[in-house]
Length: 79
Image (cartoon, rainbow, N blue to C red; front, side, top):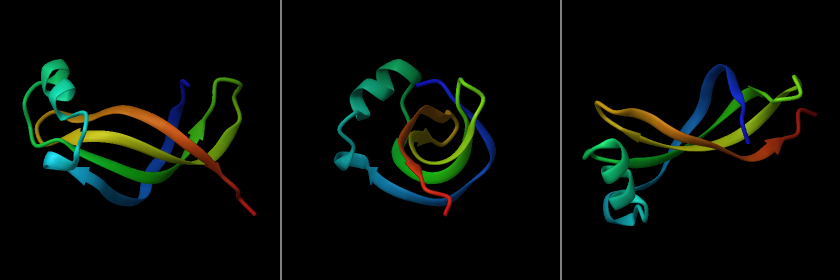
């Protein structure tokens, strides 16, 4: 799903790194070698229909390469 992050990502936490990271070989092949880490956080996102929702997202990150492959895992209830 395509989306745009609106504002900063909060509650950032590491999910997996090093040998725990199942996609490490593919990430190194596609983006370059690095110390890949899978992270999660909460951010407001603008969806394709224009609505803004609070969502839990996951992504991969490596120093010197940056954040790659953002994915919405679930929409968080505002109330």
